[in-house]
Length: 190
Image (cartoon, rainbow, N blue to C red; front, side, top):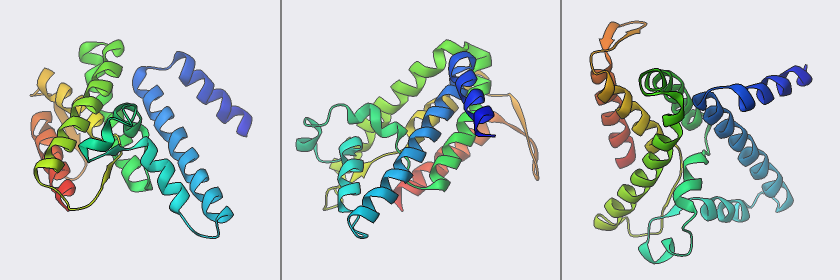
């Protein structure tokens, strides 16, 4: 059973499109993060301080003075997810809208949009969190900025593209993306 799963993963990583590769990489890193959390907390008797240090090392610190010590975090943060709902939400959106954007602009342009979305989203979040300080050190992680960049690309390229939603019916992609961006901004504030 596991042999066929590994063959499927290997096939998708070698011959699949960019969206499926990004989803697989994010899911594999999520599994590694979950296993690391389990191992570290069991070794240290339930103390998750060491695990938090590892996550903070890969996440973007919101204080400007700490960012210069972690320049790699502007790339690595977009692959770190700590909850099942976070990765499920991001990967489903990446799957649906990445397929649309990939069909419109070509598969080879998806990864640069993902990376540029991570860089711009990380910089935007740091600037916003320094303008409106939280009063404590915070860390940014997750693929939301990268996925939102791909959503925005799909909505910009084909704003009148119709998507069929189960309980609602056909809706133009521009309205779906606007709603998702609004939900994303609301979730950041809370």
